[in-house]
Image 1 (cartoon, rainbow, N blue to C red):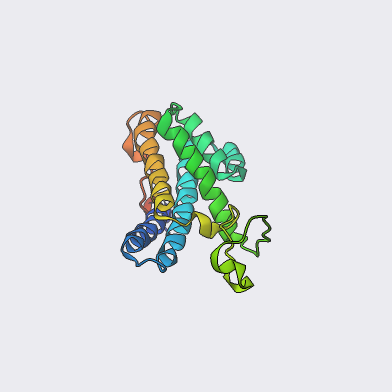
Image 2: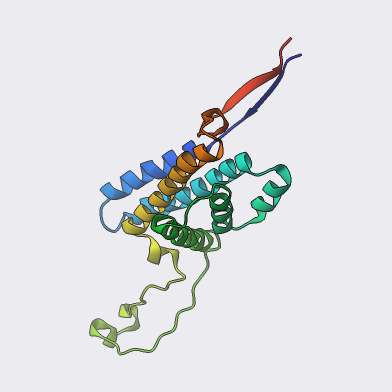
Length: 194
C-alpha cells in the first residue's frame, strides 16, 4: 500500500471570503454596510490566525510550535517576526497595532453581550422631550463602533504586511529555497511508492 503525506491549507479560502465581503462592503448602501463590514473583518481575523499558524509550523520545531500555538495572535506575529529576523520598521509596528485591534474586535464579536452604559451630559434637541430620543454614543467596547471601511482596510493591510514578511523574510530564512516556503496551497507527496 502507498503512503501519502500532505497538508491542507485553507488560508486562501478564508482570505477570499474576506476580500469578497470587503468589496461588497464598498458597494453597500449606508445603513446596510455593516452587514458586509463585520463578517469581512471577522474573516480577516480568521485569515490572520490561519496564516500565522501555517507560517509558524514551517519555522518552529515541534516543541517550540506547541508553545507558539498557545501565544496570543500578537505574540504569534512577534515570534514569527523574530524568527525571520524582521526589522521593527514603521509598517511592522503599525501592523502590530492593527493586530491588537483585530484581537479586540474578534473577542468583542465572539463574546458579544449587552454593554452597560452610563454618562453624564446635557440633553440636547429631542432628548429633552422623551427618553426614546436619547442618544447613546458609541462605546469602545462595542464591536459596532469599530466597524468602518477604514478599519476594514486596515485589517486587510495587516494581512498584506504578514504576507510580505513571509515572502520576503521567509525566502531569506529558507535561503531562497521556495519549495520550503508554504504558499497557500494544499499539497501531497507519496512517501513510499509501491
